[in-house]
Length: 293
Image (cartoon, rainbow, N blue to C red; front, side, top):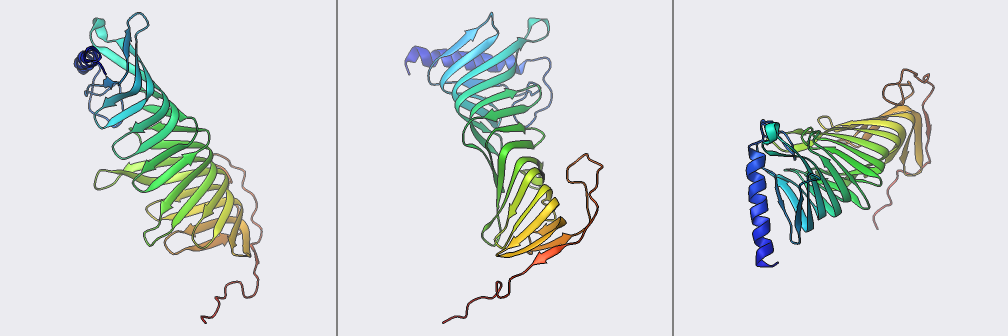
């Protein structure tokens, strides 16, 4: 980078930090990028940085980043839209668009994608493109179509063949697949955002080291480490099969219980499928372990 370019970037980011800090609408610090934060928002890049005053936007290229506190969004190109503060004072950035090799970081999570639109008013980052992935301390979430991440609230929607992988303390992993997974993160005693609960909708598949459970809808709660699956449930353990309308999967003990009673197979519905009978198909000798030589 040439010396004039470095100087331009330094002057720009320093000026932007100062005017954003004096925004009249600023309030308490929040997680994630926010138009209501007292912290300055700094934009840097290795290439160019344009200030289009008539369009009220900044364009940064080549390894560009917008950073505020411990949160940032980076890409090969950033477009930041702003509005003027009250009485023309301050510069209020309300949306950042990132293109190519996007990395969105908050204090406890990192999201990867190809494109992102970050609405600072809503605290919502929408990430699309190939190889979508979110990594946090206790799980990895992937999706085919889109992530919707409300950073400050700790809410994430993973859309399109979504998958969440959680390591087990004793080794191995638990995996959940669904058409859509909605994750709720909450702060633990150490102040880190960790998984609190999740909702899985459509073609739900839970894979543990010992079995596979399928159904139409599922809810998982981290405090109990249990998942409840409803809607045409099947539990597969080797060649053996259990069938019913509802199952509870205990991830601690690897014990699953299947029920005949019917519950709504999707949230917000009142149509309850009548309970039938549970059904099991077992193959003799399938649970036997071969003798040691």
